[in-house]
Amino acid sequence: MSPRPEVRIEALHVADFVHPDESPLAGRPGIVMAYAVVHPEGVLLFDTGIGFGDEEIERMYRPVPRDLPDLLRQRGIAPDDVVAIVNSHLHFDHCGQNVAFPGRPIHVQATEHDAARGIDYTIPAWVDFPGARYERHTGDVDLLPGVRLLPTPGHTPGHQSLLVDSREGRTLIVGQAVYTRAEWAGSDDPSLSGRASAWDREAYDASVARLRALTPDI
Image (tube, rainbow, N blue to C red; front, side):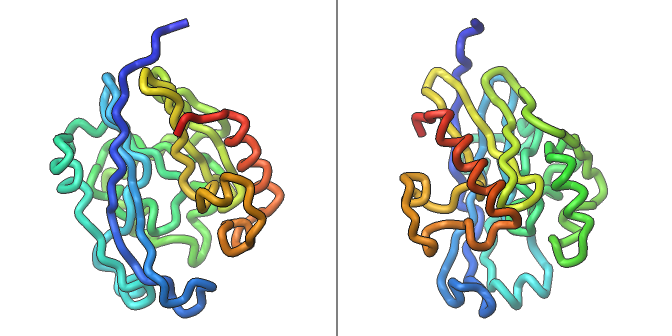
């Protein structure tokens, strides 16, 4: 077995927003996170947050996005060291700053890429832009040594999560496959779960079970 690589994972608070009126959480503040996986073979970004300049998003969500390249620099990461992007899914708050990294491969499940072509699924300009280069997958994929892409459908048709096995331990970056710590711990309180709003509730449950079975350290 190959030795586990030394990997650093940086959590990046990339935006704030307010849940819109039609949401069960209407009026409540929310945050958007992205993650930089700093690997010996380069930096992977998991999600890129909310982009800039879309009038409808600004009206509905009142977002305060932060520039992702600037956030990387603040953590000592050169944006040019980003070798690829992994989008958990292609809703607007997870792919909005892909455009800041033209030419980098964007890893998505094929079912998600197809779904993103649907009406009102996302912001088209944040998905299809000059320099966008998608790598479409149909299952588990080893992206780098110790870094595996896992399909976790439920929240959306092609949602995916990231498993990182490194010297520091086993870390799961779940995206929106699980919403809260309480849900991960087994709470059946619907207010603490994303199940009610899932695209497919049975798939959502199966994905949560799969992730729990991996027994991550984090």
